Image (tube, rainbow, N blue to C red):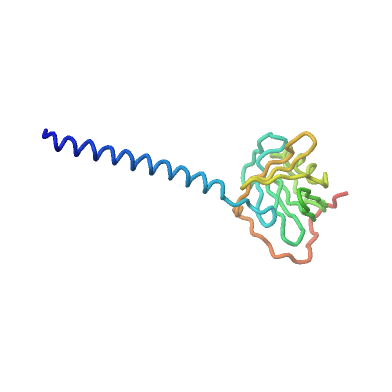
Length: 173
């Protein structure tokens, strides 16, 4: 091979290496910036799917257990068997719940999840933490409930609030 051609090839390889390093460096930086700037999901008007109760993963078959904090100050959700509802207040890092009731469907599968989830809902005041698409409800012993945000749940529509229908509703007492 001609020495001049060899010199040109070496220079082209070096330029390609420099361009590759430059591209890798700036694409990694852009990726980190995008991850940093990724918006937090709002607590209100986001479906929060129950991921774990006291760090134990939640199992479900069809529709996942979830909670939705509506802009009106009302919350609704699903335990994996029954639907529940109540009112809430969100101030600073405190989430205050007023549990109202649940439907009365008899559950055989995942009953432990329902019992534990409803017990946590009746605790009334929760400190919480949100990071991107994750909501943690905290207690004295640490993480009580761990939720992951989703924009929708198959088969569930956000409802327009109307005066409540109390059929099959069990009081909190």
